[in-house]
Amino acid sequence: MNPPMPGPLKAARIILFVTAGLVGVSLVMSLLSLFFLLGAPEQEQRRLLAESGTDLGEILLRFALGLLSAVALATAGVLLPKGGRRAHLLARLLVGGAALVTIVGAVLTDRAAAMVVLSPLVVLILLQLRASHEWFVETERT
Image (cartoon, rainbow, N blue to C red; front, side, top):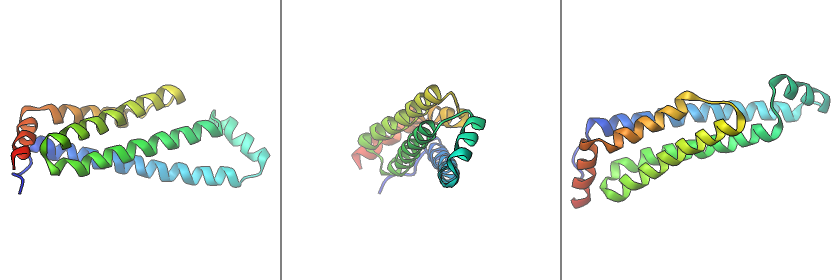
């Protein structure tokens, strides 16, 4: 049995799940909007897209990148309690990848979600703290 997780790792897990959940809610809303858009007559689709300043490709790109980010963040949150160096490395890679995907999405679509960019960076800092590192090393041995 692993020793109890230190506070920074508990905070990191909470941030990961909250962020993944908020991205998930955003994805559901995007999916509903997409269904509404695709169900509208073609002329109405063009009008709605023109008013929103976007196109169907951008909507699909944002959805795909958001889904990738949410899955990566949730997976990292699930991996953390396992402990060990492998979980530490995978969590850092997943969180860093989610941050990178979010930044790329913001650059490509000109729409930034500050919380979704900042929370993975905060989690990466929490994963690198001494207490976190020591816990991962200790759980490698148990």
